[in-house]
Image (tube, rainbow, N blue to C red; front, side, top):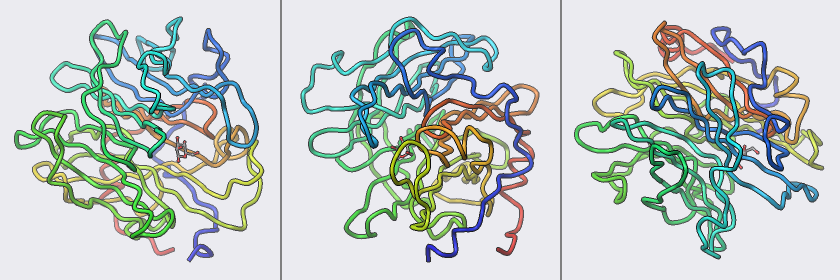
Length: 337
Ligand code: BMA
């Protein structure tokens, strides 16, 4: 099965990488920072807000002693200024059970800012949802899943009176180690979640053989919810990429359309990656080369979208595309591979 995935993958021609990539890197951050990546981005109260992951104090292998969340602001979504102090550090929550909070995704719902995040604990990985007040100075936790779950993201509005989230449980026993799919759940209040169903399985995605995960809040379009995800293929023949001794995975971005009235139905999907690691800062440099990890998807008035993604688990990058082109990709027939 893995053999099939080894050929190079290329992203879609409708994507344009920002020529000044990366848009945020460790040297832009005014406190200890080594890897700046996997950010959530939202347009909120007249400006662009980004909350990014910062891994620092490198030990060896994949181990960093520190991880916090930083915050940056921008007037144009391109040029960012990092706020002097981190937005979130572990000592702000005084819970010895929690060892790390990371990979934030921001969603504005009814003019309020919410964040989903992954939480490592001594008893498994949990998906968190929190509210961020207008001062952007604290995280108010609303709910945490049971382990193992992460990569959660909220829709930007209720659908048929219910909040909706995408999520990625780790079905280690039933699906085998690393064969993880995207699920969808509903809630009346962001706290209690249910009516869960499978949304997209690894075998539905021709460019994945390992696992999938939700990316950024879906964009509402007349054709459906335009929804990005990440897709992972693993190739045991890959050896050392980046700083680690062994890194055999490749993360790409995919795109699909979900039914407007019933987002648990996938109504279209590009059968090829939307973004594959191709630029040096994605494919050849950094801590874990070959990683595209999208977390922000912002629609602009001119019909384009800004896509924000972590590259090589090292820097934060941006690409743009016309929303109509992205919709066409989801509706285009499968190319034979
Ligand atoms: C996933 C998460 C992400 C990371 C990716 C690639 O499992 O840990 O935060 O970007 O791996 O290393």
